[in-house]
Amino acid sequence: MENPNNRIIAVGRLEGGLELSHEVMNEPFYTGTLLVKRLSGAVDRLPVTIPGKLMGALPEEADSQLLMTGQVRSYNKVVEGAGRLMVTLFAQSIAPSPDNDTLNKVTLTGALCKPPVYRSTPFGREICDMMLAVNRAFGKSDYIPCIAWGRNAQYASRFGVGDRVRLTGRLQSREYQKLLESGEYLSRNAYEVSCFTLEAAAEGDVSAMPAFAAQANRYVFEPAGRRHMN
Image (cartoon, rainbow, N blue to C red; front, side, top):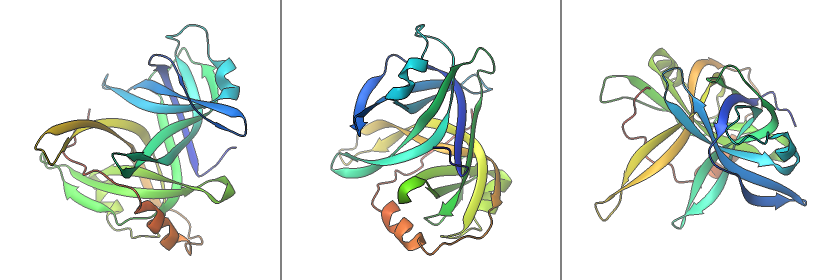
């Protein structure tokens, strides 16, 4: 189902095969990783979820370049006894794509469900983290981590919980190190939308925002740590 508040279009290649994840009303869903290039040559490793009805659209050649359109979705997964927010590209259409191997564009409209966190990186770059609640069908919402840089970061820092925001950007992956109580470091991957444009959206009904915030607070969000642009 198309959702004008949540759209993603990306071109990439599947890394390895797909695995059966779960079934809903007898329809299977498969998960894998889509490798999407940046203009810099770096590669984002994006989790993808593909409904069984789209499996027939996948080409026989394993290394084929694919154009996927759909939504950025999130779900809760228990990891090490705590709920963690997992982000995925939920595919709604798949087609071969011989061109534009750096296409990765996200459009989101939603409400902030946590206060923005504004700061500077060790390299002096301004940065602001946001958590956006984006409605979808049947009364559900996706909670999507977003990041703004420079002037966009300054602008984002002025918003408050419940404010509606419209943005465009790309879905990106980031590896970071988590310090454990034992003193050891554990490598993990985070996924977020890096903003290209950011603006206030039209005022809407935000009466449900306290529920959004309560839902978002169920998840464990890792410290951002050191970031860099590729």
